[in-house]
Image 1 (tube, rainbow, N blue to C red):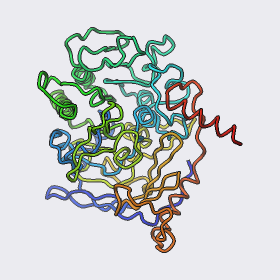
Image 2: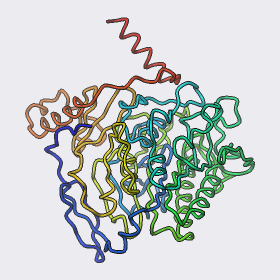
Image 3: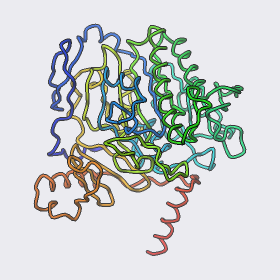
Image 4: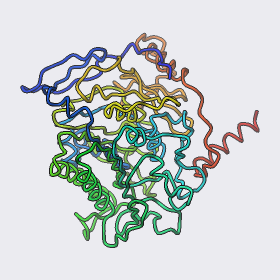
Length: 488
């Protein structure tokens, strides 16, 4: 897509920790300071690295100690952040299926039409169509990577005979997952204890098992089996989505809903620790790039029908915003990349969004991007390899929910509905500047607003929501469109 105008408040894009064993480097175009290991030995390993991409479900920065949380239940994740590259600005959508679609395709919701939540197995109708979109799994598969997914997949209905081979069509050669299912089907909501699990298309009885354990163990075995060839392992985690449940670590204890959720976050962290141990035991740790992300912010009680938030504590208060919210707590999620000797250690303030994942994985794998469609994302593979970016980094990132879009620069944030905030002094978005005198009187504020408005104005209108979508939110959108037509 055409690149919108640059941002006058770009400032520093990245800085990283310094230590005696690292040297400071200035990366052109991003005004960033970084520390790197010697790259001679790393170059060969970085040519065709293995990729383990972990996507956590419904948990935001408010639970991650490394992102300032006062909770202390993520030691494995915190260590990977401390010894890897921790991104401070990774944008995703505020709800599950739209995030996964954007992540897998490298395309913005307005481009694909998938800009509202939809569960095909529950609502029927529209689904993630391999004839319309291409995933990062297929891109890497075509470049010679072995590909697998484990965990959950909610954007196809495997009870529909026409979709039973959807994962293979999307580029995943093997799978072990909880598939979701329509009401009345054994798979419906049965993801934790006694889970309904499909392994390469076949239902396998898992009575007495804990779903996240099953999927973790299977993926560790998969990576060990394919240690001699490059692989993409996509662990789309079941944790920490509701219902809140006991885990094997605290089963039988008396707990509140929030205490159970805390245990789920802790268990997700333990699983990530098991992945790292599995890579080490298989001799894969030094040539496997590990990504950790989340699909949206923490459940604020909406999904569980509870007035009490499941949010973690930051600055002495429990976060009350997350899923479904376009505030920073809902869309600016954890994003950590780690690989000893390949990925630099430190912090990045680069403006990254979920559309950037597909081109980045393709860049790491040496895979060409599809040339028959617009890929909105940019590759940040050079940053992950301690190299100069191919071009000065983008000065904005974007996300969307329903028809409402949000674009931000390092300092400012603008909604397509007009709200405008200075995040440098108002990170909780309590003071809308859209009608403030400052917007006219202060040149930096005015320039920041013009820049972001220029980005929004440069983007195309929303692609039509596929008619087959039958979710509640999709029906609301159609009702609003019909009302608008009647009032014309």
